[in-house]
Length: 448
Image 1 (spheres, rainbow, N blue to C red):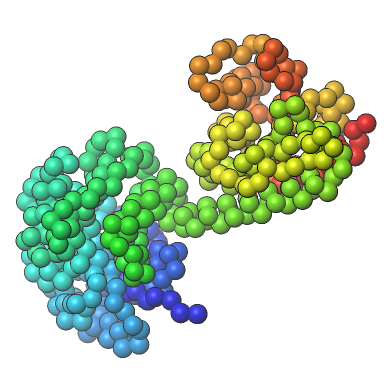
Image 2 (cartoon, rainbow, N blue to C red):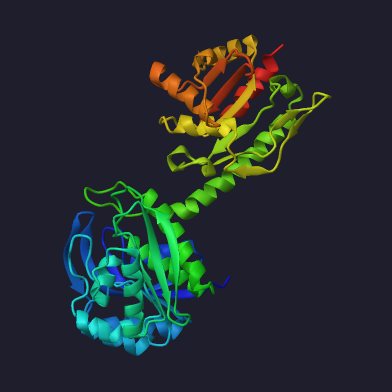
């Protein structure tokens, strides 16, 4: 199997939060084989940098020569490179390649990571294809004190024109607003491209610059256009920040692996949904569990990864009892559909339960007895106490809120005897698909 090869020139973060090891991780996530040339080794953890061992010129050059003589590399990401000697080597060996530069002037703890700034501007910026400064770094390179969107635009164009950089992306994460923008200035078109995103209240943000710039490098290496690359980079970065790691005693790293982990979990969910469908279709008495309004199964990725309904799957067209008592599964499996079961599962997860599967079935007193015999904690809720809701979907949230406030947790079985306009219903949640299958199989075998 062949893969595109790219190169990271950066420092090593001993806390594995940023730097070359993060770059390699991101390259591999996106299907690119990452190679690396180490500029420095930092003694670093989540609290900051204790010391820096700079790789001397000869060995730094030897690394570059060795990698380039063997691998076909046209795309490079530059992170921390420390001094003029390294800049000269980089310019000599990498000029003319597609270079994405993350200008890490300072670490999060304030440690200076670029020693010779004027030489950096002389040697590194002019050979850069895509520059990805944050607002602080862009202020330094442009001379503009960036506070607004217009400031970001002006600075990106100034930097591009001053250093002859084809693409300059000024990131908006350092500007304190609810919604932020990344601004791409395209020198060839003399135009701006904006990517908007919502700010995330998360302290564990170490490595954001590394992830963002390396995603762009990887996508360009695969032949993606810069406009798509920046959007993909922002999407991956947002997910990485949302699931920032609570490790160490300082500022934890973002987690770019979540991007592929969530996709892998979604694939497993789809497999589980087909497994459940096979069980339903091979169980002749399953029709007895279908209410008048029909059923649906909601299945999420692991609850700790669930953000919203987009992380929860259902059958698009419900589970239906036909006239001949055969049950039809409403394929396909879809994520993000706001069904009652999906909303109820999401509300349950947000109360801290490790729920991943939830189904609604027909109310029957014998079913309730069987569920209690099976060992489930069962609770009844009086729908007559439910206030009128103006917003669709609030009923499911009210059920969970009401139970939690009065019970302190969410039992696996919730039922109600209905009211005018609302059919009586049993709802069952479990932590995995096998448990829900075993439970429903038990009911089907014992329900008269």
